[in-house]
Length: 308
Image (cartoon, rainbow, N blue to C red; front, side):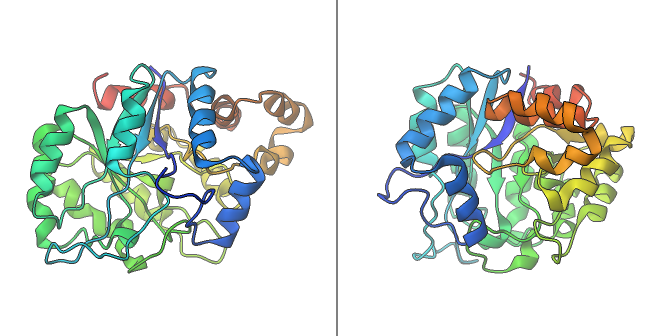
């Protein structure tokens, strides 16, 4: 089964279109791809695109708020990404194709209770953006949550590297080296974006991802937002490394734009034009990965991880 385990939908609580994006570059990219679609229209486009693609199911990721270590909600934490409740609402109307990617802050006093509640209604993974949610994965307050994730066999998807779409409290929290404690506590960890940098001058944690993925059986990395020019070299390296490819899971990071044109010199005009003929967002993403040497097993691996 092909599952895209990394997709987003916008909140419907706000009236602005694709609002709240902190990076002007990210905002302009989204505007270019989706032009004047409202948040509701973007959700409808997402569902239609999934149904018309070879992707059989998609994990829709919610985003919890930011909390202080005391467990108190940081009130000014407002994100354009949909909340758990909003994601549940959309999934309930599309259960045949959508899966629940919940987000639960580990500092919450009710964190484990929430985890158990969401598992009962079908949560397939937990998503964190550590730097934007104020989560220090090395904090002792996370240990009980790790043990609960391990017990219930729920994977943890963690953003790695600088976050461009949302405000950051501490960018160091998204350093994959901080994630090792979760692995040591038995959590199945998926490192988003393979630890790679979005902009050329930023720090890359790709080597740290490789170290963790090859050291721990329970560590993986996803292909979300990997098809951008600054990440070409990492995809090229992975395509030549079968051992590292065995630790990949498929994700797109919808609705983030990607750029097959950045591979035109590697693949040639003919292959590039074949990719561009595929108009479906998800099919085009998959075809671009395949033409860059990513094995078909990658697209089915997440289904095996969650035993679906």
